[in-house]
Length: 336
Image 1: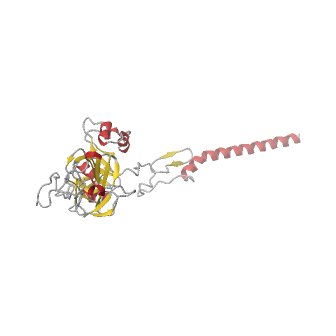
Image 2: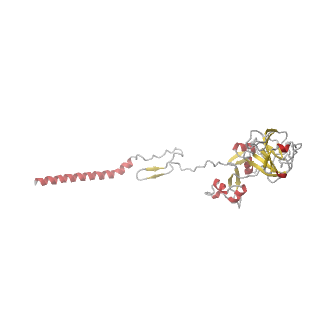
């Protein structure tokens, strides 16, 4: 009997111990939320101070069951490195198209076209605000009836170039009448105006007019410049002759013909190419300004350009080329 009583007492003691453990566990669980509210978790993120810069302020956060998940980057829109802004530039007293173009590393033609400039000297335009294209292309204001394809065809570029640069895939509203767009790689007209004869005081700007040329004594072609110094002759790796004269000296058509091209080319800079009779063509490179346009008829001795430094050159000169039926010739054979 005594044995049974001891067994019963032992069972009661074990039961009481289990009950006490269960009660302690329940109490701990119930107290846990209160302890979490009273002290921050190890991986919780403290709020940024009000004076923090935009780069350090948290843009977004999401609360999870255990802690805070914070944004690791500032979600700001970035601009691609090859997209440059349009510059608003105010003309100064000593500015010229060529000086501005050299500074912004584009050609004078794209500045002239984008701003409707016809006088490359920018005479009496001090203080005027002009727009500098972001690259070698054209600024164009969309007109009623324009399409991306028609504008691209007019500037001789791929429509995709206009779509990509102006983000028209995502923002088609940018191509609407009155909107200014940029056409990368656009073909623009050459500058065809020149200041009046410097001997005529205060004369207005006029279209270039014929002037006498220095003719060779027994050659087929007239010399394109007067009293030049030949700094490089025609040879296998040089397609013409370099005739050095002072910057701004006049360049004349070597014979009667039709202007085949007038504008910018790689290395040669601003140039004029003329087609003559008997399969002869002449080219005049590194000019500072040209006074004729493609398709225009010219006469032997007519002023067509002025000597400059455009393209790849180490000094003012005209690189003069002659072709016969498409084959380069030694120009001196036609000038002697």
